[in-house]
Image (cartoon, rainbow, N blue to C red; front, side, top):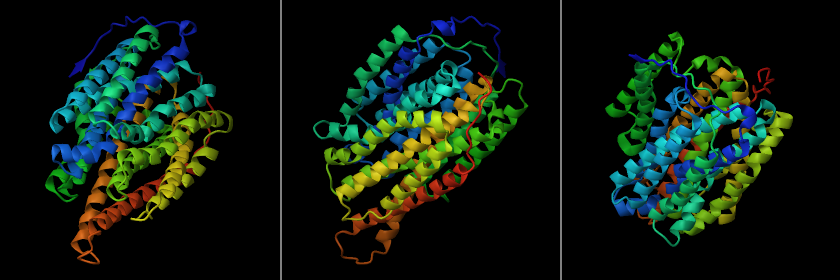
Length: 484
């Protein structure tokens, strides 16, 4: 079934009349809150577990469910971008974000909070591809590094400081206030965008293929749900996990085959013909998995094992988040000048060093050590994320911009969900395995030692993923942009 329209009535403004700076500011404000929400609740997990009488595996759905929604909706964003104007999509995304945040702030039960997170994610799913596509349309390739560096404030800085800001809030207030604090910022972004946002793309309104949307939803949704169910405690061999993963993979294969045989694909997979796009995509996925898995394990370790308050735990993570925010624009400028190779390879080495440090944590790890390792991790992430992403997107021709951003944002969120689910699964399984055969059965510290053992497993997984990324990084080359 296909829906077609030949209408092409839009109010696109000529480029020489577009006010680029206010548009970028509007996206920065809105995008920061949207991606801040990915990790903001991580510091409140213990409070949520106690308030709602749930376990660690269940509470992770507040993060995984958010990413699952993104993984389902972002794949069709390339289509949505060609059907609706920039102003329409920006306003709609902010409305969903505001409603979801308000419902979350008032949530009396875990179910209501989960629904609120899904509504929030719908807003972010509309915003992220729109933001990247707008930058690609407005900013010439030779200047994109600096602007994408600013976007690094959104993509990596916001999730990095999420636990810190929420930890400061939780020092004196309840977890509800994490959302109450976000509301006025979203309101400001909505008002600012209503005043300054302009339409920057030409609407083509391609055919809508319902079957492609269904296959995409089942495919990406099944993959994320399968991994998350394993993390929730179902185990990798359970029927539910195996079935959803198999169905997801089959649906994605059918989706890919259909896209390659359509004249107007929902997601144009020709982007994978461009090698630097593929390498950039792999590196972004690696960084996303490492960052989100670390940002969910660390707060739990700091509070459960080191017995730190949310305020203190948040302060320990703050220097790394600040360093990431400060360096992202700088790395963008360095990318414009030197290209990606001399940033991403050292950056991945920094990440490896940090993850090795995390894999050695124990009951006596000092606060200074944690601060230092988090800083090293965030420096590495800032060196890899934006350069890899920008270099990859630069190789695409303009007609593939919507599809390239859709592919990159979709797989980025799916990889984040997978990384989070696998990390939690390894944490839980490692904890259970240690407790089943403790070295000293009467040791009162066994629960803490078991948690540390599980955390070590999770960080070892992150090390393996990063090594894979490092291998790909050696093949990255600067893209020579021939299109305008």
